Length: 75
Image (cartoon, rainbow, N blue to C red; front, side, top):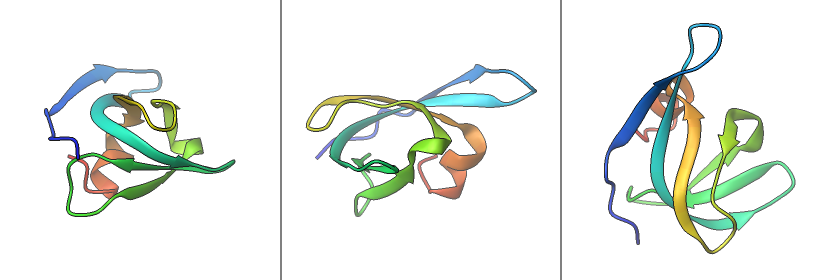
């Protein structure tokens, strides 16, 4: 399981902020990814919310809007 390392906030277009979240991708479907970001349980996130994510079975950083990261309890 990945231990949260915090996140990095970066400006994006249209006054949106993107955050990078350390995670491990457990599963990936056509529409969503299941990630372990150090929370109590893994979280499914729609791909339409993401700009980038690690390949299945890999550790890396997920790039998601700050609003959606808060909605999923990632920050």
